[in-house]
Every structure is written in C-alpha cells, then in structure tokens.
Image (tube, rainbow, N blue to C red; front, side, top):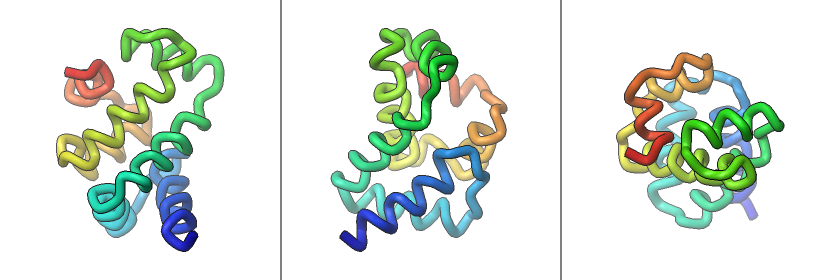
Length: 110
C-alpha cells in the first residue's frame, strides 16, 4: 500500500501538469524501473488525466483510436522514461506543452 501512495504522489507531480523537481523525477524513474506494478499504476493514473480534446490530440499523434489514445500515449511515455529515452528536460518540455521532434517520435512509437 505504501508503494501505491508513493507512486500516486510522484505520478501526480509528473503527469498532471506540475513541473517536477529533478529529485522527484529521479525518484520516479527509480520507482518505475524497479516495479512493473508501479509502471502499470502510472499508466492508469496518467490516462485518467485526458479530457476529450486531449484524447483527440493523443489519438492523432499516436495513430490509434481516440478511445485507446490516452493509454497508448501514457504507455509510451512511461516506457521512454524507464528506458532513459526521455530525460528530465524532455519531461519538463512535455509538462510545459513544448513538444520537440524527439518527444513526438516517442508518442508515435518510433
């Protein structure tokens, strides 16, 4: 239960629009790398944050149906964070709605 609380607290900071601190980001990456359950919970929590416009936009970028787009976008986001493809600076860019070609490629699954 404690891990769930930590996951939710860190995920809220990263995935809701708040810009995380470097320390929060590093803790989040460590948590995600060590726990498939934490990754699953992070994807679920992330996908809940999409409104209709967000689902539509994510559907266009991910090239999947609007219904599946939040889950797919969040799975790709989390996988990129875990693998190190997304850096702290990239996550800050995403949170501030600055989408670089690298970030778009990740959301496209490339």
